[in-house]
Image (cartoon, rainbow, N blue to C red):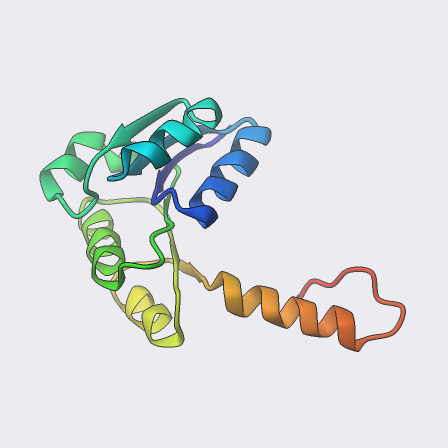
Length: 142
């Protein structure tokens, strides 16, 4: 079982929370929108309403104690970058950040993300390969 800090509870973040919950991981979820926080409560060990760009707040979480930090903020470029950078400065072990464009992806990698996921791009490639190939049921890249 891993301990995961999940920041950003939009559509992508909620799906991540549900999947991590089904895998029996400990999840602390954070978002500044109370409705989104309430929606994921059944899938988390704890959930907080807060602004992840607040350095004092992030410091109070003890980010070094989490096995991984997931920054699932996709629509707010600056908040995503700021949160990723602050997590790195606070000693996060492993940071996965969501990108919403190729330039966002580059900035995240340069500002502390260990890994960047770009869901729209990754799903588009997967869909094109599945639909463009005969007799292919699933695909993964080695």
